[in-house]
Amino acid sequence: MNVKQIAEFVKIEHTLFSLPFVLIGYILAIEQIDADVGIDLLWILIAAVGARGLAMTLNRIIDRDIDAANPRTEGRHLASGTMKMQTAWILSAVFLIMLLVSAGLLNEVALMMAWLPVVAFVAYPYMKRFTWACHFWLGLCLGLAPAGAWVAVAADMHGWAVITDSSLWAPTILPISLGVALWIAAFDINYARMDVESDLEQGIHSFPSKFGEVATTRTTIQLSLLWFACFAFSDPMEGIWFMAASGIMSVANI
Image (cartoon, one colour):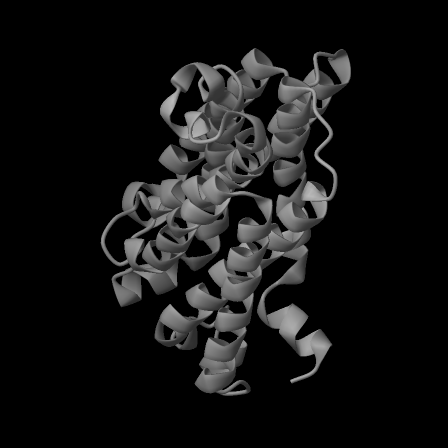
């Protein structure tokens, strides 16, 4: 496969979409510790690309049969047979190595906590087979992005206290990560509207197929208000522009 096909397979645009979440965590950390972090941003970005690529590749591998039975997704590489499973597994290994090596070059805490997103990525594709709460699990996966970047920087100064001392992370990165998680959940609940018929036929669990259109719309609005509140209370940029951007995003999401 060439680079273009790989980019299409892992949905490189989704990776670009997630990078602002990573950067928010990074900026919040450097403002909090007020220290020179040198080349850390490079390793954080490489780790983010590796994590996002791993998540998408695992999702495509695990969901290949579901994708093949869905008219909207039957053209995906593994579902249509245009990519071999061996190639997909090789890509998974490459992305995992990117994540682990970059985390190791950051600090011990980042490396030792790298298992958390990997487990979350593996679990996500199976969630939709059992519960409509899968959308919130996906939100959790993306909510780890700012938290991971924050840990990667803050642990340089505080070590394992960034995990064990809630006074460091609860007032700072927690509202941002929770806001991202709720934002993605709201987005994914709406996105699932496209697959209601296929989900019902295959026995796949989703919020729209379980609760219907009215409840989906109402819940999307409620989640959008909640994630805006999380961003509003955190306001890491301490300025009106962050608030204005959050407001615009919340309206667009609704």
